[in-house]
Length: 218
Ligand code: SF4
Image 1 (tube, protein in one colour):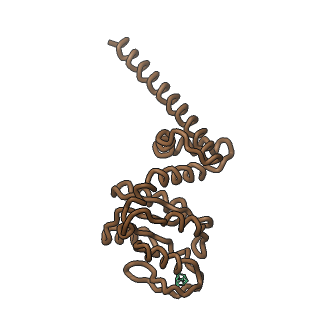
Image 2 (spheres, helix red, strand yellow; image 1 turned 45 degrees about the vertical axis):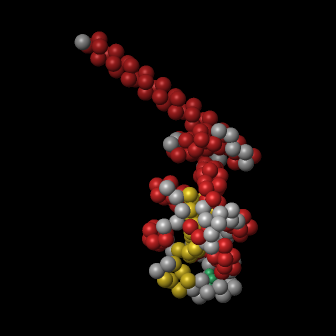
Image 3 (cartoon, rainbow, N blue to C red; image 1 turned 135 degrees about the vertical axis):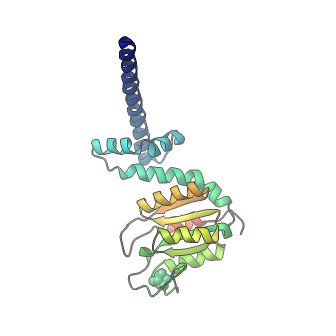
């Protein structure tokens, strides 16, 4: 009996060691692919990379930090990959079923807009790019909101029942937004700010206009 218990412990011990080695090997491979994709913008084995980024995120990020590389690369590649996967579905969704969420920090510091139930009400005063970007998107059929936080997003999604969402924000907000879209079975794409912060943040507006180009019918 004692020998059987010893054998069981040995078996479990070996399984744990082999499992840990397998995870480490997968994380190393995932990290190499992520670094390569970030450098070349070529995405090899996208499903495996997504697995590394979501399931092995903590180990993969630790590896980047271990070799002195900014682990934000992992989030960057993860968002780009998810965007690539969702973009076709996003564009196949009629524009009147697409919502855009802009963060309030994108507004000019002297923005005269007032807060409403649906976020900040832009009056297109011309002090920042938000006004004309909203006009362009709305003329295509989009509903656009300038939101102060994620609670507004959840409420507006419940109210307007979109098929697809474009969110603009910092890396953390975009990651959370894409996860929310996955949970709600919505086609979500995210655009990360070039400069994040609390006020006067910066967005590459050319990228924004590229994202909202419509293939769907409103
Ligand atoms: S254009 Fe709109 S968002 Fe920008 S500062 Fe004027 S009112 Fe505010």
